[in-house]
Image (spheres, rainbow, N blue to C red):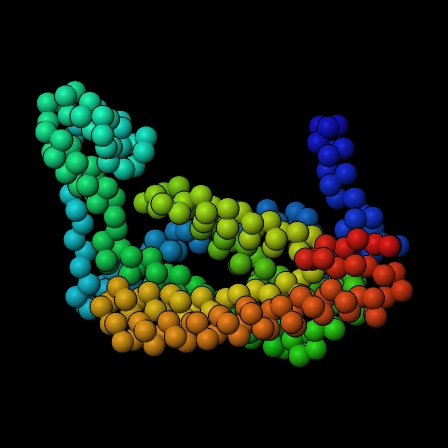
Length: 312
C-alpha cells in the first residue's frame, strides 16, 4: 500500500496538474458547488454493464424487427465440419496456410489441399456477422451518438463557454460542475467502457487491438480531463467528435439496408461535417486558443499542451 500511495502521489503531483497556488483540496465539493471528484470515475464501470444490457435489448427488440421488416438478410455461413488439427491451426493465424504447411496439414488430416483451403475459408466466413447483425449493432451506435449529441448540445448550449471559449479558462480551476455536465461526462465514459467490455463478447474483428487502443485512450483522456477539471473544454471536444459519427453510422445503416443512394448521401454529409468539425473548428478553435490564451488570462503562465499544464 505504501508503494501504491507513493506512485499515486508522484503521478498526481499538484505542481504538474494544477496552476501554481492550488492543490487538490481546492476541489472539495459543497452543497452549493460540485467539483470533479476522483471517486466518480468509478461510477461509469458498473453503469457500462447496464448500458451493455440496454444495447442487447435495443438490438433484439428494436433493430432486429426493423431490419427484418426491411428484408435484411440474417443468414450466416455455417461452420465447417469439426476438425481438431485444422481448428488449432486456425486459432493461431486466423488464415489459410500455404506452401509446405498446407501440404503438412493435408497429410495429417487425410484431406486434399483444396479441401483444407475450403475448410479455412468456410471457418473464417462462419465468424462473419450477418447483414442483420451488422445493421442492429450499427443501429445501436446510431441511436447512442444521436441521443448523446442532442443531449450534449442541449446541455452545453446553455453555458457561456459554448459561445465564448475564453470562458473555459477564466477563473480556472475554480469551475463548478453542473448536474447536466456531470451526467454528460458519466454517460460518455460509460459508453466507451461498454464498448471496451463488449469487444470481448462480440465477434472478434481484425481491428480488435486498434479499437481496443482507441477505447482505452478515449477513457484515459476523459478521466484525466475530469480529474484536472477541464470539463468545459472537454464537453466542447465531445460535441465536436460526436456530431460526425451520427452521419457515419447513418451511412452504414443505409448500406446494410441496401440503399446505396441514401448511403452515398449520408457519407457525403459525414465527410463535409468531419472536415469542418475535425479539420477547422477543432484545431483552430479548441487547440490554438488553449495553447496561447492562458498566457493572456493568467499571471501564473500555465502552458497548455494537449490538455496538460506545465506551470512556469
